[in-house]
Structure formats: C-alpha cells, structure tokens
Length: 137
Image 1 (spheres, rainbow, N blue to C red):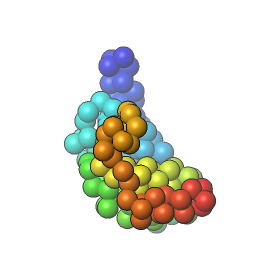
Image 2: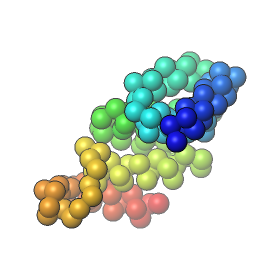
Image 3: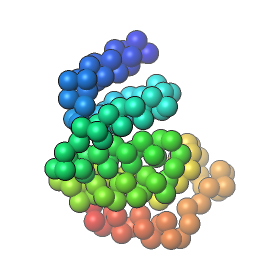
Image 4: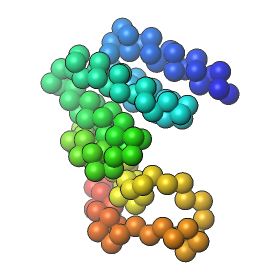
C-alpha cells in the first residue's frame, strides 16, 4: 500500500509542477502527505501555489492553507483560513466539514470509544458553533 501512496504523491507533485495553483490537486496532495506522515512537506507546495495564485482562486488557497494548519496542529489558524473558503462553490462544503471537525475535536485526536472512556468532551461553545455550521451545510 505504501508504494501506491508514494506513486500517487509523485503523480500529484508532477501535476503541481505544471500548474502550481491547481488547488484541487493540491488539496489531494495535502491529504496524501498527511496519510504518509509527511506533513512537513506540505508547506513548500502551499507556498509555491500562493506565489502563483490569482485573485479568482483565493478560496482554494485559503482552503489548502486551512487544511495544512489543521494537520500541523493549529486549529485556530485553520478555522481562520477555512472561514475564508466556506462560501466558495468549489471548496465551501469541504471547508465547512473541516471546520465542524475542528470545533468538535480541536486537538485532532483519534477518538475510538465513548466520551466517558476517553475523557474528551467538546466545549459548549464549540458544539454551538458546530451546530451553526451543520445548519449552513
């Protein structure tokens, strides 16, 4: 499975070399790099995309930066970036879904069992924000 992941990563990297500001491709690469444990590699692709980004594609840039910050463990920064993307026709739904996940699990912990066993409970404010976003979704 690891060889297939690396092959997919290389394919996305090749695509981004031709078109660095293709945010659909970049968002897939970010997810693959996270799954491969290579979160530190994400920044160079996001920076290159930002340098080549046109104003019309800002929502895609904000979405990718938000997901990057989420995977780097910066939930507040992620929410800020994703909030900019949430009204976009292409990235809006995914941005809102990521925001809901962050509000309900800001530390991005793997929760396998019930809340009472793990001791994890989202704050009432976070739950309220998540409900607002669910209605918006």
